[in-house]
Image (cartoon, rainbow, N blue to C red; front, side, top):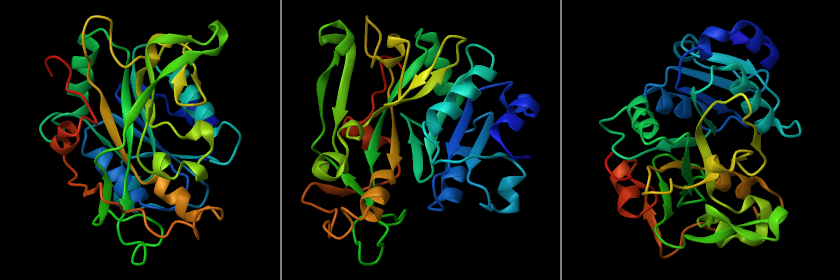
Length: 290
């Protein structure tokens, strides 16, 4: 189904979000749109919504199975506005996931378990959101892949990740409970080219809808418990989003594209496109029992 606006979808597409988990793919440009969609289709989301700029065409075999919504990615607060509107339109407790094009959800043992199984287990753990680490992917050979994007030549950093306590500005900058700001990847190594508020790699990209819930800038929510990395009594599942988004931005931005000649360094490793590699490096957590 194709909808000419988000409002049209919200008025006529209720069946698409009647059952979760629902995936929202926010298309910012034409890079790896098809591969992003196909990757998430394999994870067995109940429904996939593709928000894309007007004029973007998709293969017929894809468009017949998706809900395609015209969306302007350059409007102010475009992501927050779209995700919040869709969340509010779903039944409370519906699991929602969102990402951008050229991003790929990875979670523990995904080769044998569906995303519904992942979220069913997380729900049993009495968790309503899941922390995801955005792992920056990049092409090793920028002469061959000047956009910084290549699924076949995808690399990432095996070290250089760290976390700092998240402070509460409204409470005398006290440390927030079970919340951290995570850093690493391209946004750490080339931080001089990245705005301060865009340098973190944590994102609450999986969450359950609630009437009061609102996503804010920085990929966090107005309910502080949603922003925590685990519950109070033990470790919980976390996932990763393998993302070319930072590489794309650094290669297209006039201030960085002619300065950065290579993303590769001695701690670069080939991305294997499997969950075990990310588990071994600590870039996602299987929790206590999953």
